[in-house]
Image 1 (cartoon, helix red, strand yellow):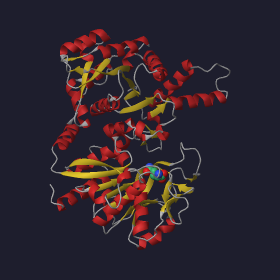
Image 2 (cartoon, helix red, strand yellow):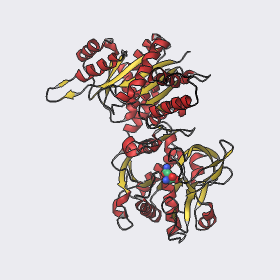
Image 3 (cartoon, helix red, strand yellow):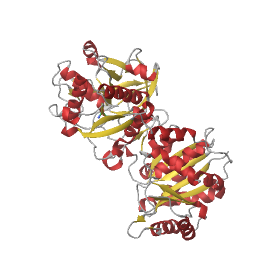
Image 4 (cartoon, protein in one colour):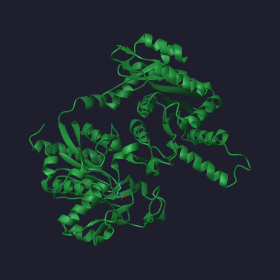
Amino acid sequence: MKTKYIFVTGGVLSSLGKGLAAASLGALLQTRGLTVTIQKLDPYINVDPGTMNPFQHGEVFVTDDGAETDLDLGHYERYLNVPMSRKNNTTSGAIYNHVIAKERHGDYLGATVQVIPHITDEIKSVVLSLAEGDDAPDVAIIEIGGTVGDIEGLPFLEAIRQLRSELGRDNCLNIHLTLVPYLRTAGEHKTKPTQHSVKELLSIGIQPDIILCRCEQSIPEELRRKIALFCNVDQDAVFSSVDVNNIYEVPLKFYEEGFDQKVAIMLRLPARNAHLEAWEKLVSDCANPKGKVTIAIVGKYVDLKEAYKSLHEALIHGGVANRVEVELRYVNSENVTEANAAGHFAGCDGILVPGGFGYRGVEGKIAAIRYAREKGVPFFGICLGMQCAVIEFARHVAGLEDANSEEFNPLSDHKVIYLMTEWYDFRTKNVERRDAGSDKGGTMRLGAYPCKLLPGTKAHDAYKKDLVEERHRHRYEFNNAFRELFGQKGMVFSGTAPDDSLVEIIELPDHPWFLGCQFHPEFKSRPMNAHPLFREFIGAAKKYAKGQGKN
Ligand code: GLN
């Protein structure tokens, strides 16, 4: 089957859940036996979100092939259970970068290089690349970032307008997600913002086929009729996307509305039934936990869950696997000290220190880790979290008082975490180099790397495998010069690069559950298949809670 395209645009406001809507539709089509991929086109000028502040833009999601991408790709992977790659996300910056490089190279043979056709052609080729190769999916969903009406989104909209006539009506579908607010004082839903947003789309030549209305409650039939009339769509092509408590309910809600059915008919997809058993089980498991654990996340970004999106989801998945509700307590690491740690973590059944950059808040993270280690509270350190656990161990167990990471104190005599400038990359079979002080974009160890697990450790027990692959995003590494000393003091290096050159997982065997990993396991966790380390961490928290007389 030739790849069919679904273009998803958003109107009125940002944060309406376009990414989740795209992912949920993709998941439904998948349950009908179709292969699906999703691509995000981001209109900003950054070449990738790698250099963007997570506080503003949310988490940077890392793919196996080492691309730093938009957090929506995390939703796509979690809903489709298909690994995303570099191909699944592009930005205006990347598009312009490529076009300008070609111009400098003389590839345009003297032509004046313009937004139309050169930028739009580049966008089209990125979109069409999804349909190339033997593994081309049956359906490609293209999500356009931003809101219709933004100046910067125009080239993307123009590109999809052109694609529709080039690919043919039966092969393309435009879905517009908009907001239908409910005005309590007037006691009615309001359609005017939707009308305006569709007018805006029409003015650039795009007629939506389906209108998806984000709303508090399902919108009544007469309102659908009104929207259909004003927006030029079939009445049965107006759907509600209602607010839900649990994001994994969205596919089921869409199914109830007949959304995937309409998409299948309009795109002439093979008539098959959706199989929702797995989604139904997931939602019912989430709704019926047998207990509760409280996990403290000790980080810098306490006000914004978006900055730790995949982490948040992976912890929920760990809860589903253990049939417990996971309550998350975000603790600002800048406020934690050894003196007040007990107060911050009272009632917590597990402490997690996530990834991060920069010194701010690091001493609080180290204090939290000391508390977890000494009090036997399950501890999970991820990336910077593992590095902090190493520093804590060096200072308080191995007696190296000034131990630090080169990132935070380049003058320390004991740089237990340091910048490794050269290592053999098993993936590329090359010696890779990294220089301090070079460009901030793209100077990290990024993407999937193999990790060998030591039998008899918590890591090996969790994965039940000898070799795994996990995704990285960091510059600094464990300093091998301290391996022997820390080993003597009781630290176990349960995961390493296959040639032993890099430490990837550390753990403390004389603690109920104390594990740190240099990679980001949260990127590979799935709602129906929790990541082994998150499953075991929540399992340990459940045991701890029980020991405390809870549940
Ligand atoms: N700042 C640390 C490093 O660059 C950790 C990065 C992270 O946690 N992702 O190595």
